[in-house]
Structures are given as C-alpha cells and as structure tokens.
Length: 370
Image (cartoon, rainbow, N blue to C red; front, side, top):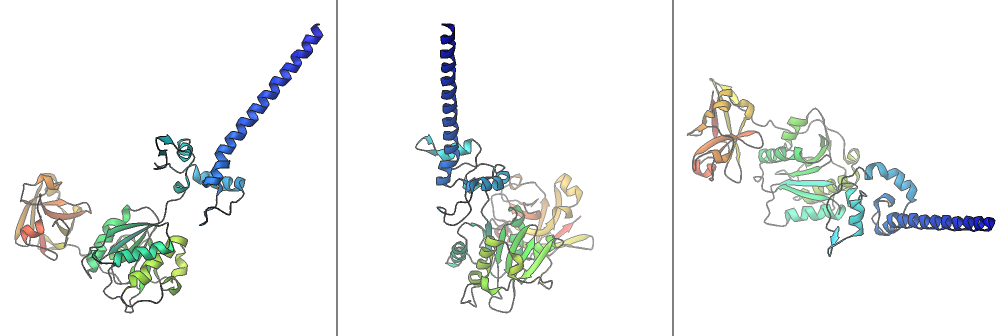
C-alpha cells in the first residue's frame, strides 16, 4: 500500500512541475510578445531602422537592440499626448512609464533658426520654411527675428550674436541680411562652437567671428547642386541659403559644401574709447520697447557706480544719474541705466519708451564719466 501511495505522489509532483513549467513559459512568451511582438508592429525604436517608409525593411532585431541599447535607454522620456487617451493609459504610454523610450525621443530633430530683415508682411519667410521642409520635413524651425532693420548688417550681427549661444549643439543658424544679393558676394557656411551659420559674406556674422575665432571654420558654400534651380538673382534666401541649411541638416557633410576660406568679410563691433578721462560710446540700437542699447558693457562701469547705483552718463543732451538692476526700480517716466540681458548697458524708462521720451536713437553719442 505504501508503495502505491509513493508512486501516486511522484505522479502528482510530476504533474505539478509540468503545470508550473507550462505556466512560466506562457508568462514569458506573453511578456516577450508584449515587449517586442506588438512593438514591431507599432515601430518599436530598438528594432526598427530609421527609414522613411516605416512599414518596411525591419532589420534583425537582436542586432538592432545590441546597437541601440546604450543610446536609447539613456534617452530622457518626455510627456506625450498619446500617453492618456480617453482616460486610459495607452500602450505606448505604458512602455514609457517602464522606461522604454518612444521613437520620437531617440534623436532630437535638427534645429534651423532664421534671422532676417524680411519682415512678416509678405510671403518671403514662409517660402524659406517651405523650401527647408520640402527637403527635410523632420527639421524644427525657430524664428529668432525677421525684423532686423532693413539692410543693417550691424543690427543683424547683434541679433544673432545675442541668441545663438542659447541653442543646442549642431543648431543651424540662417542669417539673411543681404543688400548685395545677386552680386559676386559669396554665400558662407561657418562651423563654430559646435553650431553652424549660413549667411552672405558681408560681415553680418561679425559677432560670431569676434567670439569664436579660435574655434571656427569658414567655407565658401559654392556647391551648386545644393541650390534650387533656376537660381534667382534677387532671392538667394530661397534658392541658396535655405536649401543649403536643409541639406546640411540631413547629412552634416560640411566639406562637400565648399572649400575653406580665410578672406571672409568682417567688421569690428563698435567699442567705447577712452578720451579725456571719460569713455565715449554710442547707442547701437533701440529695441521694440524703445530701450536704448549702448555699446558699453558691465565691465566698463566704474565699481562705485555698481556699488552705489550712481552713474554719470550723458546720452545726447540728457543726463542719466541712476544705475538700477531692473526696470521697475525706476520711477515712472524717469530715464535709468541698467545692464540688459545681453550684457550691454541700456537706457530705459519704467513703463515707457526711452527712445521716444528722449527723442534719441541709433548712433546717439554716449559719454560715461568716471
């Protein structure tokens, strides 16, 4: 009897072991199917090549995973409007919650910025964007400004000089202030500080040259197969600069776009000069609020002015005696001096327009008495 019982017990244990094995196999298979099977159909980033036709050409997934894991799993997640749909967590959201990145988070789209004197009253800016997006629909476009003073190279140089360093590496900056369009002036491609600048060779990039001269490559962008054809004599923004930027964002092959040059045009950003115990400078520009931006910088100010808030600044025929840290420190209607966000000393009026109040503008002499 005891032998029969022992035999039955062995059978029971064998059945239990088989059940557990089957259950574990099913669970593992279901998990793998959830992670990889459905993900293949939805374009799981670890297993799919970055091709334009997202429904075809799937590579061998083990190799793809091995190649992509270090990059993909160190990519930060970001919120997506697909995470919650009708109040239910979507499968793509669930994957993100477990730390598996979505396709759009693998590599940031290339960024192209636009700085021009075109204004926004007609089609010019929109046409630039259309050319770029037709070549590279995945690019991110950013408008720095389209209100550079017409034909004003210094204003263009100051605009891009104030903005470029705040962009991510490999940003492409298109700067078009081009009074010499259609002449023999050259189109340039400049690599500097791990960013790129595309502009006419007329000095509009002088602020970049001044700051990045030790780590800079300037090329004559004359590879015409990157241009639109036929080539207009009056709209190189559309036919030259925009397509060069777009093709650069797809391949990053700067050597193929032109030869290095060293005779590019540049001018010095005006600096104050010390004369007769005072420093003489000028107003560089007035911004949209009427603040007068001078060419004095914070380091030009005497220490006593910084500590005491008392300054001796003559702007045209007007005396400015207060140095404050922000607009609101000034009394209503009172002209004040302060160091602006771009590092230049500016003249402003709290809740007012200094250019209009004082009747001053670009080129007005500014004298700092120490």
